[in-house]
Each structure stands twice: as C-alpha cells, then as structure tokens.
Amino acid sequence: MDDIIWSEFEKLQNHKKSYEAGDDLIRVGQNPKHVFLLTEGWAIRHRTLEDGRRQIVNFMLPGDVFDLQVLANLEADHGVTAVNRTVTMRIEVDDFVNMLKKSGPLASAFWWSAVQEESILREQIVRVGRRSARERIGHLLLELQRRLQAAIGSQEDVMPLPLTRTDLADALGLTPVHVSRTMSALRRAGLIEEGRGRVKILDAEKLARQSHFDMDYLHMRRLDLLNGGGGAVNGHVRQDGSSHKDFSASTIRPPRPRNS
Amino acid sequence: MDDIIWSEFEKLQNHKKSYEAGDDLIRVGQNPKHVFLLTEGWAIRHRTLEDGRRQIVNFMLPGDVFDLQVLANLEADHGVTAVNRTVTMRIEVDDFVNMLKKSGPLASAFWWSAVQEESILREQIVRVGRRSARERIGHLLLELQRRLQAAIGSQEDVMPLPLTRTDLADALGLTPVHVSRTMSALRRAGLIEEGRGRVKILDAEKLARQSHFDMDYLHMRRLDLLNGGGGAVNGHVRQDGSSHKDFSASTIRPPRPRNS
DNA sequence: CGGAGGGTTGAGGTTCATCAAAGTCAGTGG
DNA sequence: CCACTGACTTTGATGAACCTCAACCCTCCG
Picture 1 (cartoon, chains in turn green, yellow, cyan, blue):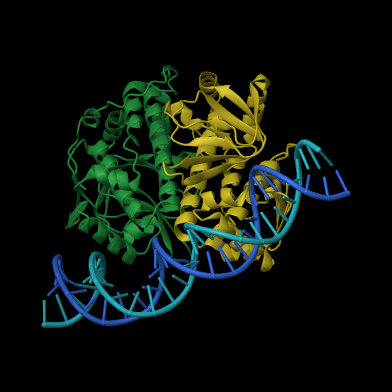
Picture 2 (cartoon, rainbow over the protein chains, first blue to last red):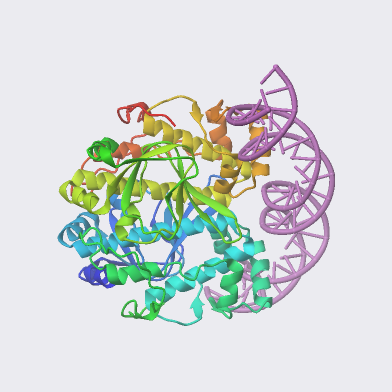
C-alpha cells in the first residue's frame, strides 16, 4: 500500500530535494506548503524550550510520509531536522489534495499513515512516562528496528543508527551521560553490539522481554494494510475483527533500494 | 467549526450513550466500530503495562471527538475509560464515512480535529520527557484549562478537575505521592487553590512562566479553525501565511451548555 | 599535528520513588 | 448522632535512579 504512495510521488521526480545533516526541513512557526516523503536518511521532529532543553518527539525513517498536518493549514509547532544526509520528495498541498480526491485507496493510504504515526507518538509517551532508562533504550531500539524492517523489507538484526548519545537522550528524556552508561550496560549484558553508526541486536527476545516491548506492536497494523486495501475512506471496511498474528513482515512490500 | 460536528452528531440523538466512572468506552484489542463525540464528562486514553504501571496518554474533554483512527480499521492499542459520569454520541463508521464524503467542510473539521489531537500528544511528550515535576503539573493544568475554555467558551479561572493524584501521576510519569507534594508546593506558592474536584489558577501568568507554558499553544489553531472554514480537503486552503496573535479566545464559538 | 565532536568514566548531588503511618472526607448503617 | 468503612491525600524517613560537572579518551578531518 505504501507503494501506492511511492508511485504517486514518483511522478513528481522533479520535486526531489536533499538536505545535509542538521538542515531544517520544517522550521517552527513556518507554515509549510508541502507534504514530504522521506526517501533516504533520517530526520527528527523536535521541540526546544527557551532554556535549551530539547525533546525529540519522533524519528522519521526512509519511507515515512509527513507532514499531513499541513492540510489543516497550521503553523508548525515543532521543527523537523535532518539527522544525516537525507533526500525527500515533496508535493504541493494543492496537488496533494487533488491526488486524494481522485483516489480513494490513496486517501486511505495516507489516512493509515497518519494513524500509524499517532500510534508511534502514543508509544513514545508510554516509553518516556513509565519506563526505566534501560527499558526506554531497549524499547526504542526495537521499535526502530521494526520500522526499518517494515520500510525496507530487510530482516537483518544489524541496523544503521545515525544518532548521537545526545539525540537518544533528547528522545528518551535522559542525559547523554546516562544513555552512555546504560548502553554500556546493555553491551556488557550481551544484548547489543555497536560500531560506527550501526547497532546489532544480539538477543531480541531477551531485550524485548526486559523492555516490555510488545512484539505485535506495529505488526497487525501493517497487516491490516494488506487486507484493508481500500479501507475506510474508500467505503469498504473489513467487517471481521479477526487478528492475524502469523503475519510475515517480509512480504509487506516490494523492497526498494535505499540506505540510511 | 466544531459546531458543524455538533449539528451533524445531533441528528443522531438516538446514539447517545452514557457511562459511569471507570467504565471502558474502548477496550484494548477491541476493534471499535464507532466514532465518538464526548458531550459530558471526562475520559482518559491510557495504556497499562503487564506489571501494572499505567500511563495516561491524554485526556478527552467535553466537545472532543475520537476515535478517528477507527477509520483505519485497527485494533485499539490503548483503552479509553470514563473518569466521571460521561455521555457520548456515537456514530457508525459507515455512516460517518458517508457524512464525510458528502461534506467537504465536515471532512476538514474532522481532519482538523485529528491534527489537533496529535499536537496535544506531542506536547505531552515534551512535558513528560523534559520538564520537572512542578513544570509538568503547572503545564498540564494550564493546558486543561485552555482546552476547557475553548470547548465551553467559559473564561473562568476556576475549573473542574475530576482527577485523583494517581490519575495525575499516571499522566505525568510521576508517583501520586510526589504529585501530592508538588501540588502542595504550588498551593503554598500561591499559584493555585483546590477544593472538591475543582482547581483555581490564582496567577496564570506566573504559573505559565514557571512551567514554560506557551500562551499561544492551541490558540492560533483555534484561529485557523475560524478562517480556514472549508479547509484543505475541501480544496481551498488559505494562502497567506499570516499569524493573528491578537485573537480573542472568547469569540471562538457559540457556547453550549454543558458541565463536567 | 591540532582541534572538534562525540563517547566514556568517576565523584558527588538532586529529584523523585518507595514504604509506611496517619489524616481527611463522604457515605452508610446502626 | 456516632461509629465505621473505603477511597483518597498528606507527611516523614530512607533509598534508588538519574543528573551534573569535569576529566580524559578516541576518531575523524583539515
């Protein structure tokens, strides 16, 4: 289904734009006029308080679509900044709206995408509000891994992690120092391995158990994506409430060459 | 604009339903079939970990619409529970979708509502991730006050607060004990006053400053609501990027009798 | 080679959690 | 009217998780 999005965006190759690490894709207070599809690299959505404290609200990975909020024509209350070199495809709000009006499935796809993002935000609230430092880190790593796998279809246990301890700290409501210590502990416990911008999760089961990571999280979502096809806006919503936990993530979508 | 929502929902009086404190409006794992409009009382969206830790993700106040996510046909990953006696109007997904298809402005109104909710979620992340206990409490109180004012049009500085210390703690990532202590401190500092389920904010300016509460938060949003009218889905989006900080909240919408 | 950015480690401090006891308050029943 | 109950709040004492400050390290890069 994301492929619908991809192909639509691809008609608009000319609107490709790339950014260097640290560049702002969206600045606070600005009234953005585009919807973005991130095709390469990572970006963060963040907010900085007057005294300098920064909170990263969520991460945007390759394949992610934002800012659908632009449709409501509001000033951005949070900035979006590139973590590494990133490439986006952008589409004008008006063109975008026309696209939606022409295609029900497409509208569903985007609605689904917005719902998905909200789910990630809620999970982030739980993570920061009610988990220990160690759980937060483990949980975030697993979520990122899962999202990357869903996006690019890879099933590897090693993934790129272009984040500094400070980035992680600002995402998790901790200090860089404490993140460092805690990750050392995870390393010593044989749960992860690190090196030059990459992490390998050595024992995902154990890490998930210790972090209270729900292995179904973001899973049945993907799933419904498959079956729900046309989805709600299109008018035909699936009526059975069945769940399908035997779903295999690797079939989600045709992989598309990309890197971080 | 919310009035559009109100009047549409009102055609469906028969779908009124009320709940007692503690009743679940939506249970985790369930696949809800309705969109809700909360007309009386408060509700919380929350998630509980296996070991009992609970996180309240956000509060639903009179006038709020949820669960638009139902349109994506996903199992609920978080429960929704009544805090007090609440009354909702519910509308079937299919009817709802038909409504949206018939009316562009209505679709915009709902989109706006979803965007608004996401904004509140992001603010919650910042609050829990990067603020001290005292800031969290002050900030939340101000947000609730603002939302209540926007919803019912009142400008009073005293508001209902049907939450226990435990509820507040679970929303803010603290313990009830610490919430109690911190609220005592706020009381002693002459910032607030409490009594039988109500809070009075004595010095909003000072509390806002101390909590780093952005007085514009949820403000210009309301604003665009007024002017944006048709909004994006309807095809005509306002083109000027002007901001209107001189907006007076009391004119937001025709007040509608209600209580908590 | 020197400097910048990031990571790690240690010592000591603060905020918040935990545990436990007592206090308030509304409701209930004798 | 009073005793009793149950749900909630407050307060105190103690401890753990996490922060702060600062030194030192490494790696990369001009």
